[in-house]
Length: 277
Image (cartoon, rainbow, N blue to C red; front, side, top):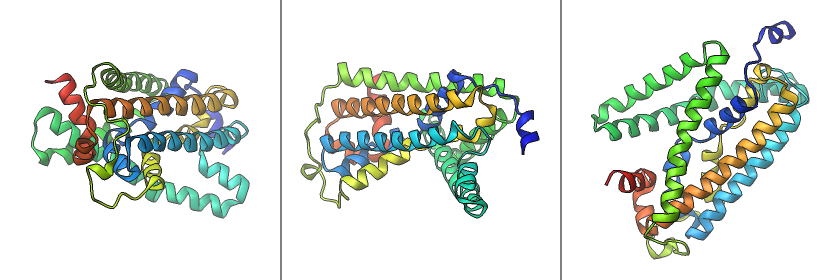
């Protein structure tokens, strides 16, 4: 493994690594989890706390991995860490789980949601959602197959582009939102089984997932002992602020009953009304 590590091109600096963390975390979760988090939490105040709690739990995990990753600068991430700490059997099982279950499930769900948003945005047939998802996923795979100096630049560009609508939604909610849903309770608008605060926090964790991906390419990071911890910790903090900001913007822009009714289409509905009306 040592020879393979020496052949890897360390093309990811702090900016690219930070972009990878932020870009990997920010995906479909923040957009289609607003309704379910609010309904489970029971009120907009509790839902805001759930987003904060989920971010802090993620940050705690990130700090732990950053500490380990700063001492093990080998490519492989969780697989390498568990193998070195607990032995080869547990390392193999962790790697097997990531390859067979975790990775495909996450990529499939995110790609599928991209396909749904893509066809809705351009008014295409619903039958094109899956082909669109496959093409998008294949394109990302192709980008990550070329030399990492190109993929690092691509990651910075796509993360910047991804942050623009996040910032726009926050600004719109803060300054132009006309429905102050802060303090409203779901009991007033829904009779379904809410699940509770713990379920709401669990729902937010899906939206915070993906940050550990950076550890998988530790061997491609410049000075990973310093860059890896900084990128993970500051990346999670940026996402936490962004998610809480988007949630507050949504609650300022839509009444609680509408948010619960719209479910996974809440943020899309808000964006459509804000910028396409």
